[in-house]
Length: 391
Ligand code: PLP
Image 1 (cartoon, protein in one colour):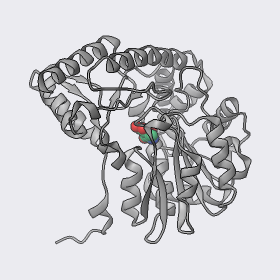
Image 2 (cartoon, helix red, strand yellow):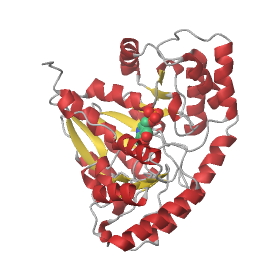
Image 3 (tube, helix red, strand yellow):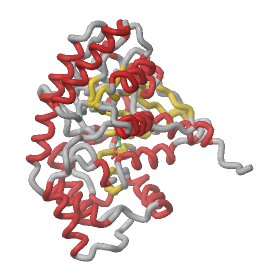
């Protein structure tokens, strides 16, 4: 009998990958499946970025790099943060990581241990809770409510902080809801956090460039009072359609950057060198592909929201960010996970049940609209006729 640590009795995973596997299995059996389950852009990485990786390989960038990433890339990240958030940062506090997820992994490992509380959004990205539980810390859900347009409530978030709280995880624009927390609420939250100087903040801004209807993404980086305890998570996966490259970046306060570097040295040494050159081309090259992708998501967003609201028993708020719709399905009478499973098996449409994102997820499903408009329309018709047949 092998005795692994107790964390493995508690660690979770992302059901989106299990749904993807099942969707692929069904497709392999010849079934027509439309996948609105997995959260990744359906676009190719822009060509100039691909070319930069090929060039890096040809130029001989085959070795290890600094654990925190190549210097020009860290400088480009600092320039990008300045351009987008109007805030100066030191490239020495930037770390290149193998995917945005790795930043949360590191941050939660740094602060999680038995006796500590970590606050995280519910519904939210499932890895937050999974990793918190792994460390033995107590996960404290911060409710993200439909009636609040799926934004964080500053008052409710602050009210959950106790002397045991070590880390607060924020995410806007958000997965799975598409909610974007408005400036007024973020300002209130940042001001309230002044009262808790020992609480670190992990701001997951992986969807920072995906907002709609003129909604502004407000980075926690803007708040000087948080700078000595803010970990900023962002990356290339969603913005540049680079999920498979495994490229993310984070900004760490002075007190943590060296700890982050040591974790990297212990685990992955450095991020794949040619991918770092691709990341550099993404940040320093033309940005039109980003705008074009977001414009396309915006068109589809309208199609998905209108289509969902036309289905009996379903109501969907208009998401203001990311590429997810998170409709309320309570009036269909279905349990969310059962509906998601039945839609995949019987209607050939992959979606994710809300409970996969937290205890507040019952009564909701998540649809990713990172798929063609035609596929989205067909999927909505299939959902509609499935519900008509079964309810
Ligand atoms: N944070 C959120 C909220 C996400 O939805 C995702 C991916 O789905 C990530 C982080 C991880 O991104 P990456 O693929 O760069 O690890």
